[in-house]
Image 1 (tube, helix red, strand yellow):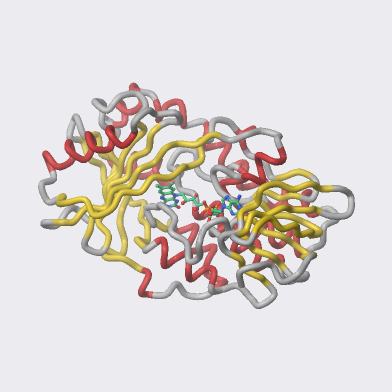
Image 2: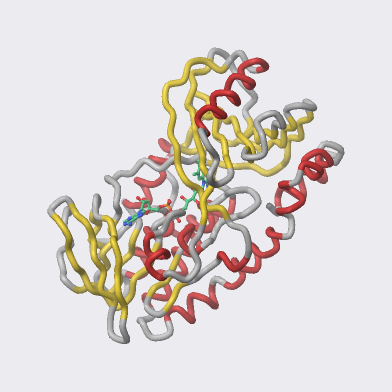
Length: 360
Ligand SMILES: Cc1cc2nc3c(=O)[nH]c(=O)nc-3n(C[C@H](O)[C@H](O)[C@H](O)COP(=O)(O)OP(=O)(O)OC[C@H]3O[C@@H](n4cnc5c(N)ncnc54)[C@H](O)[C@@H]3O)c2cc1C
């Protein structure tokens, strides 16, 4: 479908990522749903494609993940790596290594017929009153207006829905991912690396093998200037010790939510619910976001299926354990981001690093 089939929907969901798909799937139990995404579908989202066990547990009721989206090596353990001091701690925290594009496409395939999925349809704004939400979208044919009883914003780190609510704007990290050929084997781990020479704008980088290539990702703080030059510097440093890292075949950049305080978490306002990164739901300490998007998307959809009256209240209640979990993680953030914290982590024995990492 290229344009919405109806003028009025039970629920409009903005964004076809994990939060939006599960929100639409559950909201459809009440009536027709419009799921609109600004990009082409199947979409290509810059991501490490590491599925945490919480993501896998959340997905279990929806079916079995297809084997062809699982990458080689299948499972990777998180490794804390202080590059300068050559300290490595392989933890027990394991992730399923998947193709993110394949994963997202599989999710969209779960949607029932009651969901109209439209691609290249970007929300530009909306208004709400006591009866409905009126949303405006930019499509390839021009601007269109659609109304609904409820709207769920699942449009990611730079959410237009959240901006339109104008309550508390979020900020974002700059991320870059290079895919490079592999001229030999590298350790089959999700290697999370701290380097001191890149400067204070640099958060961390990671290296993970995936189906014969290596994924080299870097996370920079907001407003980092010329991040691609820093990424070149990081890759050059990595190659000094990992000559197996070959030629770059692809580079992509993206934004990831930069959570600073619990006030950044916003479940919505009035007839509008915010799920996934749009609502500030992700781990501020590890950057893991898929399990949060899946759980809050599911909860927003279930709240919408119960009808517009009290939907935000029900959603706020069901997501309160997730909010408490994010609040707990915030306590670790100042220590983890400080130079002293990164230095001291090198002295902590592996079992303790492992246990702490499980909670981040
Ligand atoms: C480089 C990188 C690596 C990552 N690696 C991992 C990882 O390995 N494991 C993990 O768990 N998490 C990872 N994350 C985080 C994870 O990708 C996100 O937290 C997760 O995808 C959030 O899901 P979401 O549904 O909230 O939003 P998204 O997946 O971001 O989806 C939002 C959708 O909204 C659409 N959209 C945006 N604006 C509009 C608009 N105005 N109108 C209509 N549609 C719109 C976008 O096109 C997009 O498809 C990573 C993030 C980055 C940037």
